[in-house]
Amino acid sequence: MEAFLIIIASIFTANIALSNFLGMCPFIAISKDYHSAIGMGMAVTFVLTITATANWIIDYYVLVPLGVGYLRFVIFIIVIAAMVQIVEMFMERFSPTLYNALGIFLPLITVNCAILGVSLFMILREYTFIKAVAFGFGGGVGWSLAIIAMASIRNRLQFSNVPRQLQGAGITMIIAGMMALGFMGFAGMVPIQ
Amino acid sequence: MAETGIQVQAIPMVKPGLSLWHKVKKSRSYTDLVRGLWADNPTYRMVLGMCPTLAVTNTAVNSVAMGLATMSVTIFSSVAISIIRRIIPRRVRLAVFMIIIATLVTFVDLFFKAVLPDISEALGAYVGLIITNCIILGRAEAFASINKPWYSFLDALGVGLGFTASLTILGMVREFLGFGTIFYQEVAGAGWTDWAIMIMPPGAFLTLGVLYGIFNSISKPKE
Image (tube, rainbow over all chains, first blue to last red; front, side, top):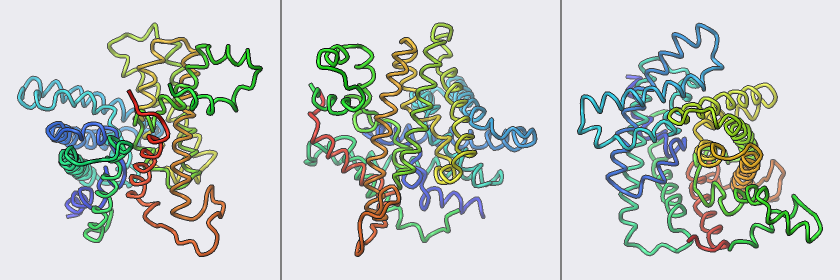
């Protein structure tokens, strides 16, 4: 039940893109095109679930018992890079269709701050294993929801008359602000964390 | 050319005579340094490093702390990568960059925890997220891995200062509208109503969007 609450909370009330600003660079850069947004969203959800699980296990069974919590940043970034590499190889071998759809997004994900951010937040909030997995998955779904919504809005925006100064990043930021305002409306739904 | 903008930014740093000033302006060190301040400003021109830009700019002090932390990591990583650029194998260079950056960010995190515990508390997980700030990796890949240490240092310093300045402007605007203060100094006076939304997530997006509009209208359009 707690895990379910965390999934709902990380999709709506504490969306990692709109309330924690994780993964903002791809959120702005890749939301121009609807299909890329879906691909990126799926890739992020997939990698996020796997890396949150892997990082939690490594943190709980290796780093904390050895008393080397300060190595977290270095270890996490290596785990993320390795996981992305492994996922890429597995996909290429076992599911070429999925690889063709997500392949180009996977290398970008290593430096996506959403991946590292979720791992750091889950340590900071002292989640249990189930909660950490739920947070990874829910965070990914929430991020996908945000970027797909943004891509759809920007798709419509092509036909509207945006002032020259605001074209590109400016109007995207303002739309994101309005989306964040909208998502604040979910706040009463689930107590945040 | 955006020459006027560059001059205004650079005058406080170097104040030589006119002929020397001309020489300085033509030198490579100077161009490497000022490029990051205006022409290639990471926040307003290249739209990089968005996550800390939006997340920690609710007060001016947090913004300055984040800017300086990012700047020091950029400088040290650029110089280190530039020194060892010839012995890094091409294929694994990104992994090497990431490990160097992660190590430096660990230092910064421990420094904040030891010396400035309040700021460490306020920045939270975002100190660790300096690792994935694309400005740092971008400088390492695009500049430090193909240039000498001295130029890499200047380039990193310029970009770092540009980033710090952008964050500080955003932080000051948000803190003023949200609390009526700047750097915790009362400026708005009595009768000021706090705009609570400005210190919450939507305020970050809206303020930055409007700032983009302002910066684009005072500088010449790209291309």
